[in-house]
Length: 108
Length: 118
Image 1 (cartoon, rainbow over the protein chains, first blue to last red):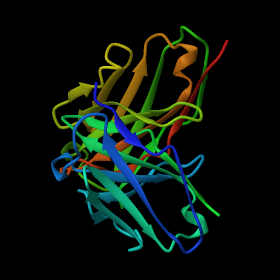
Image 2: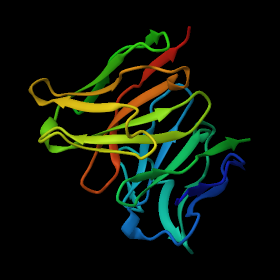
Image 3: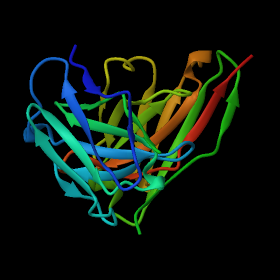
């Protein structure tokens, strides 16, 4: 059974840059899996950040960007702010959506 | 404005049945798939299944097949998630989300908290 892998946790300093990744337990992530990224703060519904690998959802600041790096999808936050401290989930579409386990990002 | 509005929190006992809803507005409800996503306390997001309200075509994650039923009533722009016999392990927040043609979820409901406890 294919598993979507994400770093369990990550830390970034305010103003810094961080790249979160989204891989597969076997195989490489490609654009044909339509990688998307979601941000969730405790008690809230997820918010869509990136879809189709690198397209920002409406209203999402341009400091969030998506890409493929190597064999993984990636979400880069440039100039991290305190309110970026959240859980981040990637989803890959492989006939049905597969959610990654999420990355808890701390900004300190 | 596109909105998905879910029904309110529920507290149930094991063995009871339950049906929660997700009402769409601000778009053509029959033209987009609606997914259900579970989030157990302190855990990540899990895709449960999806329905196309236009023709009620429904797909389930293997993990949830046979455990829940997804349905829709296009006349009132509503999708549903139901259980015939709840278990304590069904305690979770449940989200509905609209899926686009580019295979992502662009709008989310606010979530329905289901608590199952004796």
